Length: 541
Image (tube, rainbow, N blue to C red; front, side, top):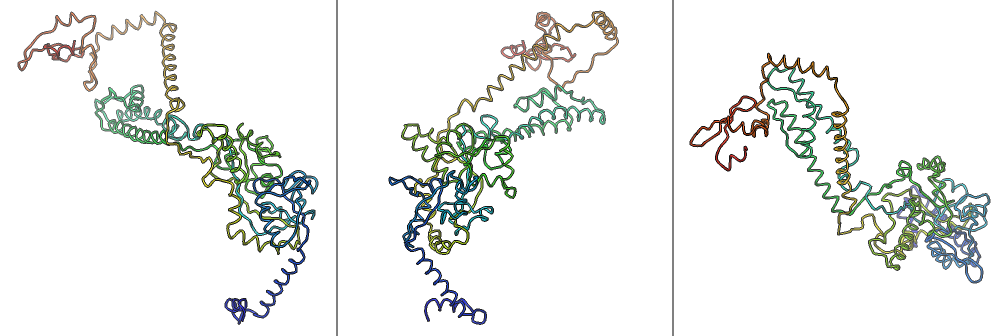
């Protein structure tokens, strides 16, 4: 029993499989492949390709013919040596994958019209392409990425606003504006329900308490009710936790060089209305125009001019567009080659290392598609070539050829791993804005006070009448009780500056517990003891 028969006998159960028929089919398959080998031996093929550096492109030779270059033609040369055929290279007139008015305009058109025997290029396997050509076994999975100009600042923000997201700042601002009125409202409700000496806190002190506590300043308010104390303690706890998180995140932001991009997904192109560009007649153009594709919503950007498709002679022509703010959508291998060539050029020009990475790639892919060679429908070359191509794919040779001209490390990554992080003027820009805003607010308040006190006059008669009425009422009205929990007026401690001499004369000295004190009455009627001896006495003078 031969080796093939032994394998078939172990895999196939005699009660289910027809051993004789399987062996006959295998023999017929081998005979068919041998006939195809004999038919292609010494034959001259026309192989189409298009410029898609570094995977495939064509160059003119001295004798006027075109020579195929790139990974695709390395595979073609392996097939040529294996099956002993010759070939010539044909390129479409407009370098399209699909499209154009004539079949000669696109590569798929050349294959579909049988003007070439096969297409040696990494062509995406799309549903609409299957109508025109037959694809080989999958060579790889193509990944389309988005390349844009490296921003100077992170998309998360810069300076003092970077630690929190935008909506978090809005929520903090809302808390600062709302909590003061809440204190006033709750203390007013409490004063209506509970009759005691605790008075409701008016709006102005409440707002200043919230603002002062937010910037970690003290307050002159001294509530005695437990309800008000809980309100104050809640706001202080909120401020402590908020400042702790803010300080930690600000330290992390200022010490790390990693930053995020405005464009991370294809959805960001549409939501943020970014201008982007891709190759004309390529896969991207036909994917976004297909209503059955997930990226069909990007076709709306074609109508407003935010998306463009170009046909440059060289991919380097895309770089000025990217430097001008556009986003380039292209295969990952092509983008890596562009960035690497730009990096090497800047290195030869003597540009500093920190300034060589002008471009950056978005972290997420634009799309992914399987890619393969293409044959005319009913072509016999697929049966012959797919076996060899499968060996090359499974052994990793195709993947190696795609990246052989690139360095092993990632080219200009998003995180440049910069060890020194010095503060820039942009990091402190918010401090300048706060200072300017504060000065502007102070000037506005000052002008308001001037206008109110100088130019808004009260009727003199009403003012005099009010004064007379007030004097009459003061004769029968008792002085209001003074809240001892609040700080005493300055006059009670230091005396009115105009009446200091009178204060010293009216004061009486008494010796209490062996020390000499001034015994004075303040404006509230309370008795105050002021030490006479220095240096304590100087604190009260």
